[in-house]
Image (cartoon, rainbow, N blue to C red; front, side, top):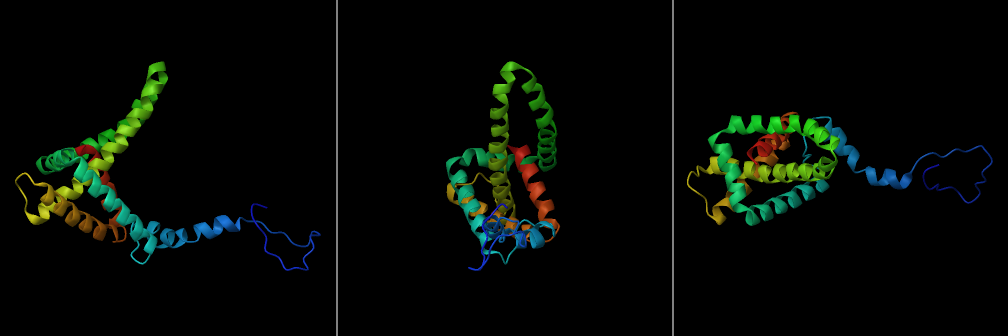
Length: 191
């Protein structure tokens, strides 16, 4: 039931054997079990010994780098907002998270609003992603001591330093998920 069965050549089905499972699905999920045991249950998004996690980190960094290059002014505005009012941007992010559900329900109650809900949710996701890049840039700026408006090269440097620092924090048990939540909420508020 639910998968392939690897049996010896002399096997005859007659009620003596029952095979339940999806071996193809189990083989695909086998790599996820160590992350669940050493990552999710320990409260850290990055498990250092898993190579596929580092591949994801690399692609996220490349995406962040591309967003930083394409939307440098927007990312810099997010970083500047965090620098000016870090607590206010965090509370703004919390407010956006708390009000997203009720606003989506209110919009869905109207005929025109049903068409708007996907765009609102996409705008929140895009804001969250750009805001997280802004958090990385701001963290890198604060570690270097950058106060003046940054050039494109300085912004890339700040992103690399901030992303490396965030990756290190994400590897610490319990603190990793706390930092992940704080970075996400602050980034959403900054955006």
